[in-house]
Length: 57
Image 1 (cartoon, rainbow, N blue to C red):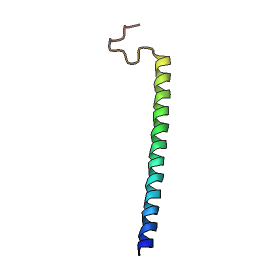
Image 2 (cartoon, rainbow, N blue to C red):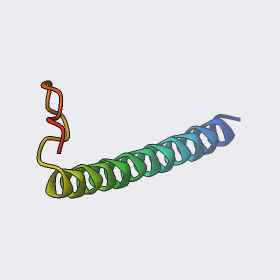
Image 3 (cartoon, rainbow, N blue to C red):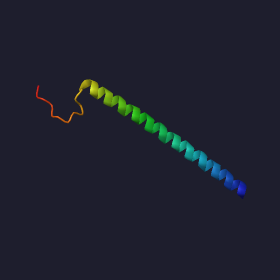
Image 4 (tube, rainbow, N blue to C red):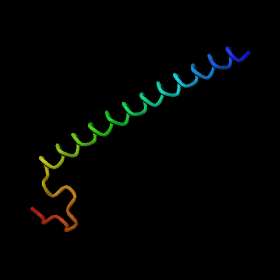
């Protein structure tokens, strides 16, 4: 019975580490994608996050 519980514990640990790795990868991809979109937005409009209102053209 102890052998079965040990295998179950190891399998659960492997699953948890795999899921954690996937979460980290998903976070990294979304972080990089967000940074790229923000960089592109600032290239198109340097005042993208300015607190002052835009002057009319």
